[in-house]
Length: 380
Image 1 (cartoon, one colour):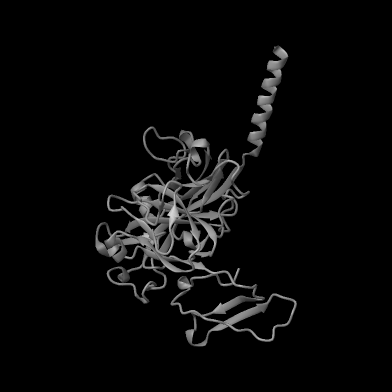
Image 2 (cartoon, helix red, strand yellow):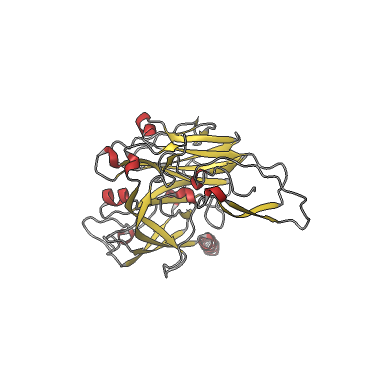
């Protein structure tokens, strides 16, 4: 009996060690920085081609703060992010069982911290300022702090949910002020065994994060209320493009106050949350929802909040489902200048095949600004 018991304990230890070895430590280098943000860089309502209407057009650029990711602890080289993330901080990823380490640098002019939803942490890694005050609750301007978070089983998808789900992270010294300033971003946790090496889910082709929030720049005055998706208004959110046939995962986030009751709606497609098919999702401040879409209907489609006055105030964007080319094109666009000198633009193309090309034939689309380019620059 003693021998059998020892064997069983040994097996349990081996199994535990094996599962622990499969977990990863994911390291992020994130700074809080003061920036200038433009809610509509094109200056136009890109859904109808008209200038951004008043009162929002009176001032589109405002002082904000953002979470910026860097490649290492020198905080010198920003890490490239998807353009559709907009004002949001970088995506922090984990597979269930992983540890997340955040090297945080406060480059802002006031104290900040970093607080996660959905992850496991102790008091020194909570990142929220209230009594009793713990380490990590307040990071002074110019100071650093390292947070350690853990994605346990409760951080990942539950029964009936997709293979990955989304959580918020945000500053929590003065959360109302800091969140409104732009210090917020997404955490995506993938189920154990269903993640690629980078932590993203294996069973989807594309992912998008969309946050719905009214930013208040002048208190409650209409001139300073920006009804934004990822910090953009009136169709200026770029990059929501997908190939026909893609399985697309949408991570939807709500934040704000009592007027931030949002209903994201897709034209042209439906989504599923694992329980129902729909084309409208309900969001409350601080809420988080994950849905899947089969992008099978080619076209450029509206994506907007369905609350009427939110639509009128510019909480609208578009997404594009493009049909893949019938055959591979050997030409690639390598450079172009369309905006500095519209009367004399240039376009450079390259033959990527070993064979000569007798002559190219180009088709063109009409768009008002770089944010309005609604399909990939080069065919995939």
